Image 1 (spheres, rainbow, N blue to C red):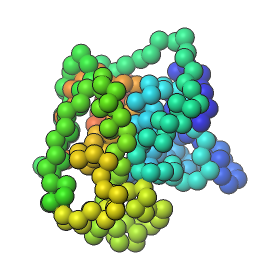
Image 2 (tube, rainbow, N blue to C red):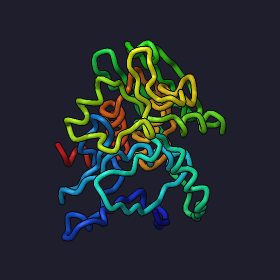
Image 3 (tube, rainbow, N blue to C red):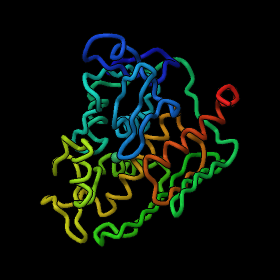
Image 4 (cartoon, rainbow, N blue to C red):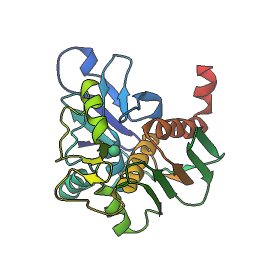
Length: 262
Ligand SMILES: [Zn+2]
């Protein structure tokens, strides 16, 4: 990762292979989401794509980094330990350059309600960012968890940043068959089977599951490239809903583009 000029935004570039396909940038933008089933994948018109951008984007959001060039030599951001903590450690070691241009934030003008059956993301105008996340899984170990955060408390931010990705054991085979989680292991994800945890070392936090959902949502909303001033309430969120919410906010920011698309 390298510094980028003010107002450049977050720009990814595939550096593997030859030809235009992998020499073109992919901007972090809700418009560039090409998949959002098991993670968030960005792509461009040349067919280049980068998967699993959400944890890195969450780390950028937490670190208030608005501009960065991110070079990558493969189709997916490294999963590392399944959380955003290693990225934050990297930023701390490297340092962050302060730029003279003022930082933008996105003020929610109109409420956004993305609803899919019993799942929803509701974003209301507010003076500051707040996030409430609720999850409800049939696995007893996860069950119902709810969390409200403001991102003003460094301890809460650290809890979110270190929450790891999780999956259910029965999903693992299906994901493998779909060609996903090829680098998946107990080193970089929590695996749950009903009331059983397969990771010997246990959880990092009793609320690690809902904390990770909050992390994913922070990352996906950061596709906007700036912090959101609004009250976000997510019920059983996933990348699909998160990205639809980010796109709805983006349309408020760029109404002209929506008209052009119609
Ligand atoms: Zn995640």
